[in-house]
Length: 113
Length: 112
Image 1 (cartoon, chains in turn blue, purple):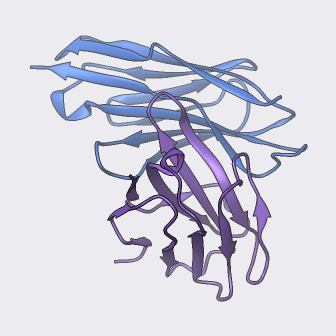
Image 2 (cartoon, each protein chain N blue to C red):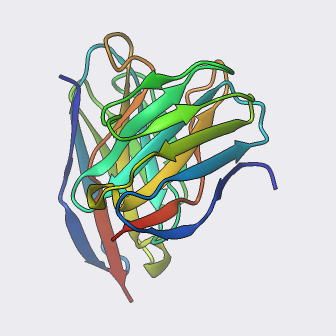
């Protein structure tokens, strides 16, 4: 069964305190791994897609990496405006859920000034 | 602005009532999806469509029906609402050959 697990469930950081969010997955042929940001009361907003182990992508203070079993979202010197829930999702290459995104439960990040 | 529009944004239903949630996208996307999001459960796929006139079941389809009569619209219906359907519903779309999903802002539904 395709599955996505995110950890920790919640993370509280001080402004400037770097850290990482984890997304581990089991999927029938990974077609892509996605990171989204979700603010309260809003829909998920696309951040990154990673397709193969070793791939890395960056956007401002965020950097996403991918291995064969997990992905990390590294946050460097976070600011309060980075506070949000970060969602990880995988897209299977074949099987019953082919083409559809399977989401983890998310990590709620709070950055205090 | 281009994107995915969901209506209504909020709704309160009584048990047994019916309603339809509307999703409209103006990006000419082929694929459209309905998800529900519950605390501690993450986003779960209800139904999806790979093109006009086609629909398919997702992970949690029971109690819902959908229709895709026009490419730009994807409707989610609740025939007889139950308290277990209290949730936030998100619609999403993606284009042919694209892996990125675009989400709407959600519909918060409460069934009492």
